Image (tube, rainbow, N blue to C red; front, side):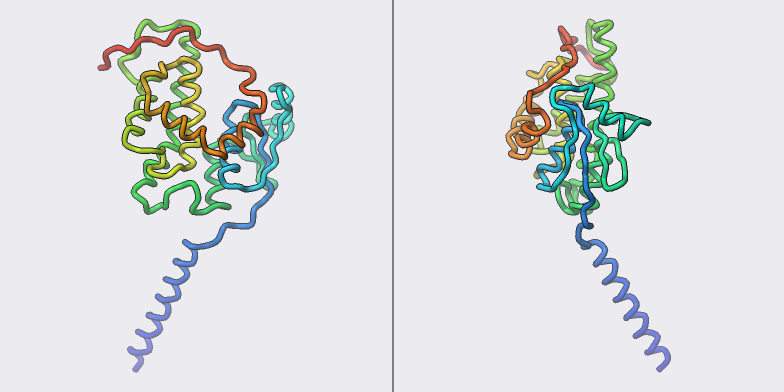
Length: 254
């Protein structure tokens, strides 16, 4: 009898624990805190505006139209330690780094939206592109841009350079519609800025990357992207960086 009672107790405990774990994976989005985006026109902070438009969630947008200095002063006032765009406040918390901001918003307030399920085969590549956008792509693009402004190369590096980092995206898009796989995701939001930098500043030759060009057209045609442009870039790009006069020709890679 004691053994039977012990078995019944164990079964009940396991059932309760199992139900609890299931409930946690299905928990609803948390009550949303006020979100304010401190923005510079044409810069990385566009990502957060675009994200919020895709989600259809409320937010405040702080910038001075057509005046990057005045917009930066607003950022410096709220975040003097490391003034950068985006700086975002969520309630009383101040956050930087667009990838981290996006993950906080999605995981806290929009679970299940704009990212594959964590047990999905696509989740790994989605997360890779979320980090690749800044960690490998933007870092290499701006490194090459600064160097080439001073001393334009006669040929591409045999190692990794801007062209090869963009080629990685080109090859992926040859087999996938979006950077998260079959569906548009926050990885596409992250990748737009560095791929625009690569082509619009002539760091790479856009004609060499037709899959990237087709992806950009798909992304830019989204209503949420158009709403972002109207709100966050009402006068087009301002304060553009100088375009490189000539991208280095492709060469053999070792």
